[in-house]
Length: 204
Image 1 (cartoon, rainbow, N blue to C red):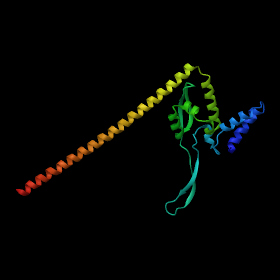
Image 2: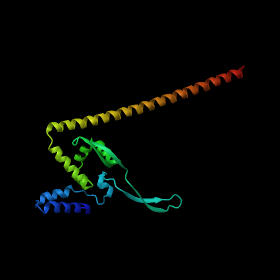
Image 3: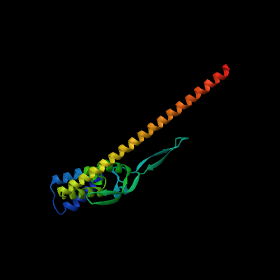
Image 4: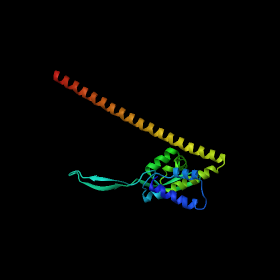
């Protein structure tokens, strides 16, 4: 267990275990839910970074190969993401990698539900995941079916849009190729006619 996981575990023990003695099995399950990442940057505690954090390395000069330390920050964007369970847009800071993961999962709710607890980097994500799981468990089956149908419709619309964009790209490439081949044919015809004219002039 990493140092951060031990800190979170001690907080849980202080908040819950001091008042009510939980069984060892429950505390063991809490340990399995805690994140395994050792270090998390401060900005990641206020958003969803999906494992992307600040990285360190060397900047190498072209002339002498001199190395100087530098760092790379993650690409963080502030976005408005729609939550079906809350029925409103939620503004939060996410990385571009997290946006791709959310898009692949089918929305912010599906991403939080599908991602296991030990892969959540911060306490905010763990609390948000637990809250959404509780809200989904309290939903009637009709509302849950409506939410699933809405997410499936959004995913199908995105897939159709991607197919149409790919078809448009392929069609534009084919038209460009046809135009270039037509230009080449015209240039070869012009060259052939010029040769014929020169041959006739030489014979005469």
